[in-house]
Image 1 (tube, chains in turn red, purple):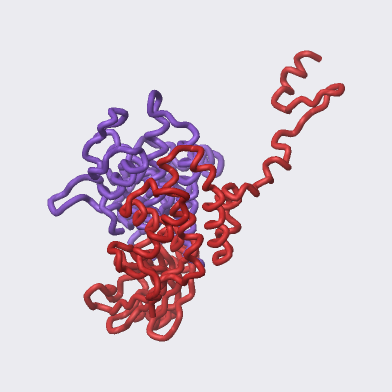
Image 2 (tube, chains in turn blue, brown; image 1 turned 180 degrees about the horizontal axis):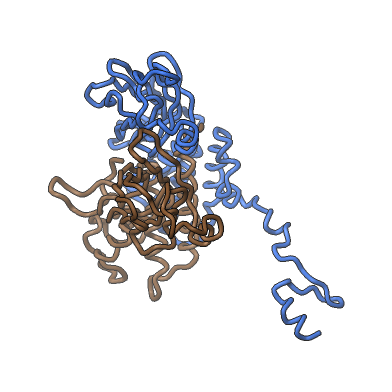
Length: 251
Length: 214
C-alpha cells in the first residue's frame, strides 16, 4: 500500500518556503531536484522494495536448465531469491567455481550429489544472477529486491514516503539547487546534505561505515592520527624514511 | 534504467546556467555540445567499469597452444575467468602476472598444461595471457564488463542511460567535474572538487549495490 498524502505540488511549495525570497528555481528544476533526492534515498536505504516473479519458460521468466537468470530493469538490485517456497542461500561466483566446478552444467536432473532443487544463488551483474543447480522447467523463482525509484512527474503525483522523511528530502533538494548559485551557497547548504546522509545512515549501517559517509560528515580523522611515513631521527629533527639514502651518503 | 541521456544534459545545463534545450546548444561558448556528449559517454563508461555493475558472460574459444587469446572488442574490465576444458567442469583462474608466474611456474611458457592463472595487465591491449599455455583446446568463460551503449540519438529517441536511475546523479556530478575542471574561463575548482567527492560517493555506492545486503 502506498502513501497518498503528499503530492509533488505540495513538495514544491514546501521547498519554496525554505528560501527566504522568491525562489531562484523553476517548478521543473524543483521537481528534478526532488527526484534526485528520492533516487539517492533509495540507493542509500533501499526504501522502495518489490518482489519479482520469474516463471520457468514463461515470458520474462527464466530459461529452464540454464543457470543464468536475467532480470528486467524494474528491479534495481536484488537482496534475496526464493525457489517456490524455499529461500536460496547466497554465495559468490568465486565460491561456486571453487567448490562446485560443475556448476555451469549442473541441472536439477543431473543426479548424484546434485540436489533436485536450486539451493544457492549468486549475483553476476545488476540484471543477472545464477542459481545452482540450474532451475528446472515448471518452477518459479521469486526475487526480492529494491525496485527502481518512483519518479514524480505531474503535480498530482503522490510521494510514496512517510512525512517523517520529507524534511531531509527537501533539505537535499535545496542543497542540490544551490549548486547553480556557486560555491558559497553550496557550502551554506552542506549541513542539509549531511543531515540527509545521516538520516540515510540511520536506516542503513553499511552507509554509516562507508568511507564516503565519513568524509562527507567530516568524521574521517584516521589519516590525521596515523603517521603515514615512519620517521627516522637525526638529532632533534625528524626525517621521513624517504631521505634515508641521503643520510647514508652523508655519513 | 529509464532516464534518457538528454534529461541528464538538461540537468547539466540548468546547473551551469545555460538555457535548457536538452544539451543541443551551449550559448555561453565555454563548452560545445560535442564536447559535453563525449564527456557524458566517458563518464558512463568509467562508472560502469569502476562499479562492475554490468558484468556479462561471454565464452571465448581458445585453441591449444594459444598463449594470448584475444578479448572481445567491447571489453572494458575483466571480472572473472574460468577455464572450461569441455568436460563439464570449470576451473577458476586466479588473476596474476608474468612476474608471479615466472617465479611460481617457471616452465609456464615452455611446458603447456592446464591454465592455472591469467594476466590481463602484461599482454597487449584486448589480450589476455594464460599461464601455463593451454595444452588442449578449451573455452574461456569470461565474465567481463562491456562498453555501455553510446549516448546518442537513436531511431526511436535518445538513448537511455545504462546505469540505474539511482546512480544517474553521480554521472551528473562527474560530467560537471570535467566541465568545471577545464582550463580557462570555465574553471571552478571549488565546485569541481565537490563534484569529484559526489562522483566518488556514487562509485562506492555502486559497489555496495551488487552486494545486495540491506
